[in-house]
Image (cartoon, rainbow, N blue to C red; front, side, top):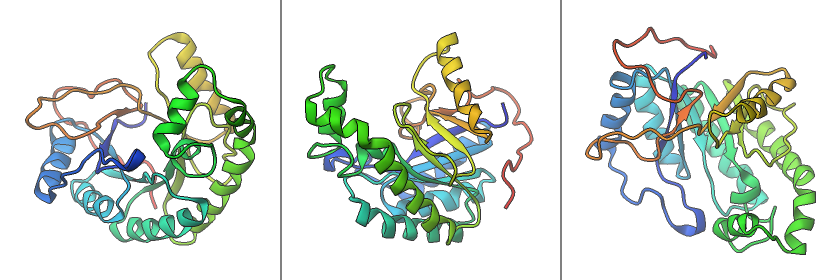
Length: 251
């Protein structure tokens, strides 16, 4: 295990409803300091749909000495809208000195036009219903080609503006061509079973570093906990004195 990390949500909007309707800058700074000083994390994945919120939280994380994974999470944008969106985010990530840029999250579900459905919620429900209709099944067969073409364009756009490492937060059902990326990332929902661990090991065949996201949820006291915090690569942070922090991906 090379790093202890956590996901910090600044607000994303599946179906138009924000996961964080209230965003207070002072609270964000306090919560980021908790991640660094109380949880003794090495890295933080700053996620959300609003580029300004992402930049503010990322700047606090950099000031706290954390390795910053700048992770835009757009919802309901088309392929044409995604490229300028990620260009803006890449400029902001470069400005705040982020280490890694995460070029979207599970876009087959959260972007418009890859799978049928009025919004992300409808697309998710169609997949988990257990009996997707013929239209959805046909669209699923086309996902790898359509998604990888889009990701190639996004990666090229980001790389022209951002000097750090680039990755993509993939769903385990997405067959990603990792050639345009520096790091393989999987939203690894699951438990600690041998089958689950073996599934993660399969990602190592790409010959690139692996980031396992969203393994377990960590619960803090309600009064002070950050939103949507999930561990990256470890079930729970170590208690006790803070270990030395390391920059894993020097720029």
